[in-house]
Image (tube, helix red, strand yellow):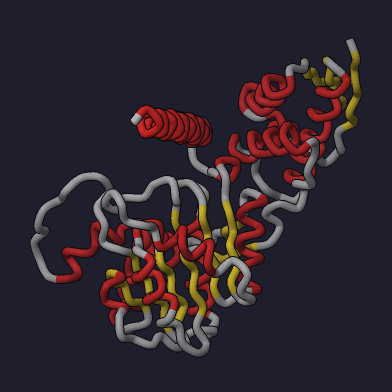
Length: 340
């Protein structure tokens, strides 16, 4: 059996690297089918040569993250393992090195995946950015973080949060209260991001001053939105007409982020998604960028990645089965016509 020795830096905090009851090391062992032992500042990795190389690469990445003063968690380790397994290697040592924003508690918000990093870079360089991908990838959260940072630094004078009022598969019926009470349930994910960034009282103050506006997409019609940071969430549930209406509201000094998941469309059968159409129509326009997330960018429980992957496989199989049935039905119809 092959073996490699990795000398640990003297300043490394071993409990942080190994995790509680060596939980971090166990993730590496399981991920690469290797055996890992440690003694006197030396780590030994035993197994197949290729697996040793990959485990060593991830271990060195984790060491760099700790030396940078960051904490390790299961998500970071599993992401590093996945990237090395699937890409044959990736420079993850600088991941999350830049601070995206500071939340209301003073804690820095940093990117956790390469997909998130590219998303933030796209936001910094473009006027309109589409963030498309599965739930749990941080699309909306990071968009809100960038918007609040821009508002605090006076790059814009207000933030506008909007989303289509489409129910996710179940009818809620008529909701009581005024307009704000009626749309609040649809806009809750946007509120959550705002509370994290500004705190409850801070968010209320900004709202009272008219610096943060939360409204359903239908109320955007006929407006010109200047000097604003505009976030359209759940954009997969817009129609092409609604998407065009929204995009043509953007005025001077404004920026827009549109987020959505094209695998979770709640529109009635037969209705096209405005997000899908926009992806085809606007992909080559300068100043507009599309950031595509995958299950690898999910920063929720590791099971969420597996759930997303399983549904993707199921959807692919169903689409292939439908195409096969359509071909068979076409063939049968052709034979009937010939017999006649």
